[in-house]
Length: 134
Image (cartoon, rainbow, N blue to C red; front, top):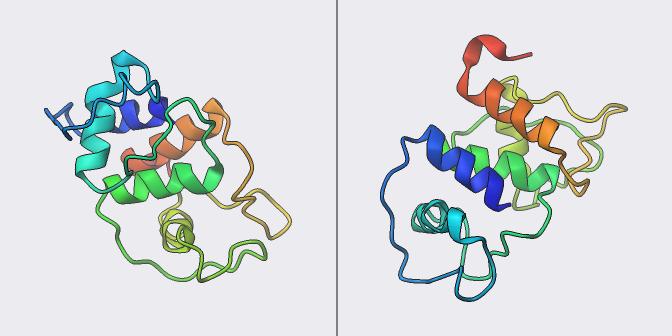
């Protein structure tokens, strides 16, 4: 999680941020990621319970990217495993509508599957480089 927060922070120009919480002292993130995590918290992307060492799921990855890019609305997607009431559902809709992902296959998104670095990089590239979209 701290890696995707750091990459998003870089993509957004590495702005200075200070959330007032020292996540590194609490052992929740690595010291190298503290400014990026503070930035994410300041944008409302995460809260004080954020654990940077925890693996990032596919749902979390698209939700972080969606939030960083302004929480835009999109057409509703129709994955069998994405409940329309789930907190990440609008992010998944946006990711599909904008060519960031087309799911995991078989009509599923697999929101709780750990997102590999390769998938995260692909999501980020497609989100930030429009001509790379599927």
